[in-house]
Length: 317
Image (cartoon, rainbow, N blue to C red; front, side, top):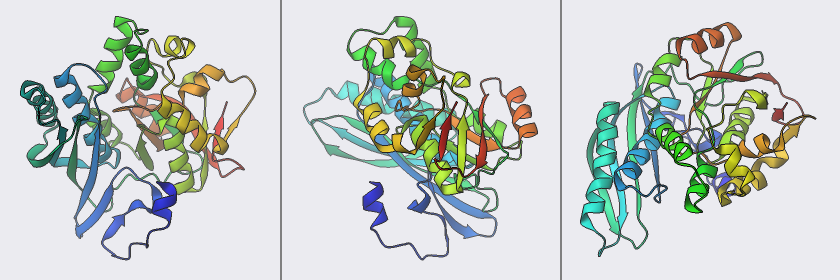
């Protein structure tokens, strides 16, 4: 996709405040001096067995991109692919799960589109609002900033372990609870502080999304691997060989951008490429502000810092 987007014509509309050129979480379009729209879309195939939970996680994941920009989601359109001969009750539960999370987020579902497809897919196109001067994009991380992260990682390997019968009930419950947690509170907490940059960590993993922030900001992100929170069961899933294909793809894509210093646990390094669903926010802000954010939002953890650009955009220690 990087190669495809790189070959497309550049957007020249002056009202486009954030387009696809920096691989940010959402696009931002200026309406007037005090208002801009934040727009994003996300959908995927089922990652859990329960249809309500699948629909709810899909909603959490789609909403996250708006909060990662510092915006407020206001409306959503559902995207549904479902087999014509499928169980209509299953579809109803998927839609109900998504709607319940949208209601929790204060975002109104105003319509959608469905297609006949033998493979179930579900998600949303979400629109939010933001002040044009208060956008928290991935291109504004500054040398000297700290990096704060708001969720534990490992949903990809635990999901793969679940499919292979290798995940414990406790690991499944913790991963599901994480994916069902909206980033609304994390966004509201970070907006109390002098945040410079933000992105959410989803399908490209911690390394992939950190890479996007580092390249867009022309800096190097130094990640203290021992400080990155891991979901219970993530290391067990790794040791059991429950490695999703997306994780391997992320290594192939972004591994060349990483400098790994001696002493890093190779298992933790591998998990930094784990594709997350409905992952946390990676936030760049001054050290004093980072310390205050960690105090204000207990789920947040300081995991590193922003350096002037070095040879590689990501450094692991």
